[in-house]
Amino acid sequence: MERPNHLHVEKANATSRVTGLVIVVGIHVAAIAGLVVALNQGAIMEQLQDIKASVEDSAPPPKAPPPPPPDLVKPPPPVAIVPDFTIATAAPPPSVTTAPKPPPAPPPAAPSAPSNTRLEPIRSTFTLPPYPDISKRLNEQGTTVLKLLIGTDGRIKDASVQTSSGSERLDQAAVDWVKARYRYRPPTEAGNPVEAQTLLRIVWNLKDAR
Figure 1 (cartoon, rainbow, N blue to C red):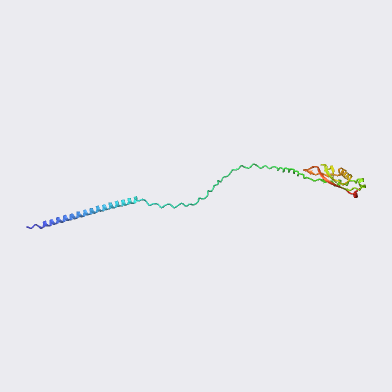
Figure 2: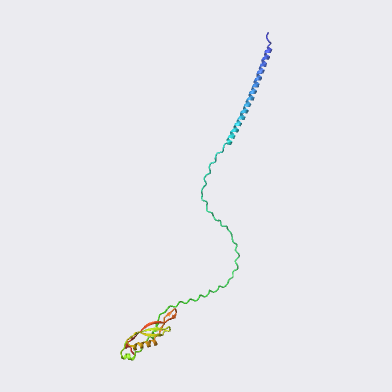
């Protein structure tokens, strides 16, 4: 005996609904699974990025290049700074005009040391002694050389015969005349007169006899 058609139709509809429900559920499950997978992949990527970031952060920084060597430039010499200051000076006192004093008289010139002088005869006193009369008659002639000592006053202090004329009368006449008449300017030493000695020659010649 055949079943009625409506039973077959209801059975087919029920199968179609179950199949559609399974498909819908499968689609939802697939969608949810995809979403979960997507979420899991995002979380994994974030973890990977965090791990990468931590690895990159933990890497030591690169060493800085060494600094350039210092420029060995000789420093300039120190410059002394002289402070600028002003010294206050007191007002100058009022000027007082006084008459200039006359210059002091120059000191008297020191006398020059006197020079030494030599013995000098006073020519006006040098005259020929008179010829002894006896010597004239006897034709006595010759030259008497006398040694004289002159005092500080210029007079003859002593006279002696140094060389005889050959006649004692002529020699003695020469001594007496010279001591009485002849005068000298005595020599000086440091301005003071001193005694001196000299020789004097008396020539006896009958041509000059008086």
